[in-house]
Image (cartoon, rainbow, N blue to C red; front, side):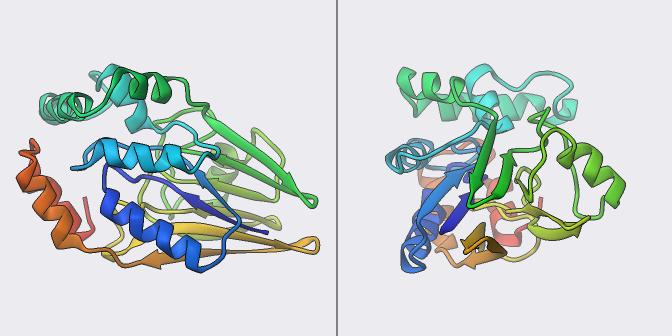
Length: 239
């Protein structure tokens, strides 16, 4: 069985469509979504509709929480708080009340056991939507922050937009990166794949091209607030 884990779409429906096309070509059996669906991209409604059309497991990310209730003081630097809420308000203006209800009701964790292989998936950490665990965190920090709540063979998270795979104590930790806004300098969508076969498994990071210029045009044509900054992040694949 092949499972794709996607996350951090951030309203980039062009990238999401490219990833879903890649998933189809690879004959992946199941797609799971680890949050951050709408916020900070030019097509929030289209992105959410595509995710909901998958009829699969979806969990909440910090950006989904922001869409529901706004960005609060202390969650981001004070100097960007106003602009981020302006972007949030623009995003909400493109959604319906039922969309907000859907985001509000999303769970925050996924647990699977497939052929004896346990998978624990979450957005940032199992206990917090906003915590940041970077690729260079030491093994002790990874274990404490990501692996201590549940026993599994594979731990999967997103949030930092920087994909990596680590092996610790015979277990796997995988960050799946970002579909819509990669931050690792590579201007390609990222997602994670788990292949479970006859009691064994493999994991991989998949990268997918998407038409960046089309997304840039959508930012500009949609009068997105803070468009210039978001376009630069998209072009450089760095925050």
